[in-house]
Image (cartoon, rainbow, N blue to C red):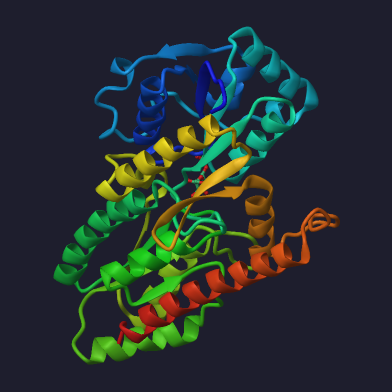
Amino acid sequence: MAKFRKIGILTSGGDAPGMNAAIRAVARKALDEGVEVVGIVGGYSGLIQDNIVPLSPRSVSNIISRGGTMLYSNRCHEFKTEEGMQRAIEVCRKHEIDAIVAMGGDGTFRGATDLTNRGIPTVGIPCTIDNDITATDYTIGFDSAMNTALKMIDCLRDTCESHARCNVVELMGRDCGQIALYTAMASGAVAAVIPEIPFDEGKALARIQRLVKSGKRSFLVIVSEGVLTEDGQKYGELLTKRISEQTGVESKFARFAHVVRGGQPTLRDRYTATAMGVRAVELLLQGKSNVVMCELDGKIVDVDINYALIADRTYKNKLKPGDLDSFTKEQIASMQALAEQRKQELASLYKMVVETSK
Ligand code: F6P
């Protein structure tokens, strides 16, 4: 067992329901192992600014059910500079922080690997509502955000049915359409529009017209925020206007934005956060770092952070020259296979939404 005396926890990037549950799990497990725990308040900025607080079993009481993050979060540009990173390392040395558990998305993991490379072993826990980390089937916050969205979309269904209307709902997800696609499926939407799959607007409008003739009164269309018009505007409002004009069905637009990022985490998120949090501490104590906790086929496993970051770029077609240099042929092939698997998963869900929207 590695002799850690003190572990730091930080949350960074966009918050996600379940982050608190993960903080609690890491803190309680580490304390149970006789390791001191400190919270780094305000993500990587908090580390640079020396904003460190001790955590006890009691200071993480009753947070498992709360959204947001008790350690606060932000996106820190200073940490991307060598000076910022050196300052962060100095703060770790000052507080005798031997290791860090960093919770967030891909930006957080880039920071985690920078810390590990500079002598502070770090493990990442994927927390983002977007579920956009290729290496893991699931990111903490995804289920809660979708369920929050779904509750509100179900409300819209009621009023759309009363007034024979359509409601277009724009959901977050950055470049990833999963939140929109899953909620479209679960709300019985007539169409889902996501960045990854081309949308046939003409077909969708014709479908609405056909369904009106068959007696259908209410329509929901779920659009991911990452879908843009040719001139770079968000597509949702434009589509709302076109539905009204071209189908005769009065259409309203709703942007849920950050509201789906708040609120109570679901059981799914509390469980995953707890399982990943406990495992992250076990790994650190076994001397393992620079890994990100992943869920693959229902199991919690650890994946090398560099592999996870480059698998992500492979899936998103964002590989930069040299990105693959440090990987073996087998690793590159497995990244490509993973990227292909993710594309197929999305395509088959998309097909299901279309097939059941008749
Ligand atoms: O990554 C999570 C996320 O909520 C995305 O879905 C969204 O595009 C982005 O963060 C919004 O970021 P911010 O909170 O900085 O406005």
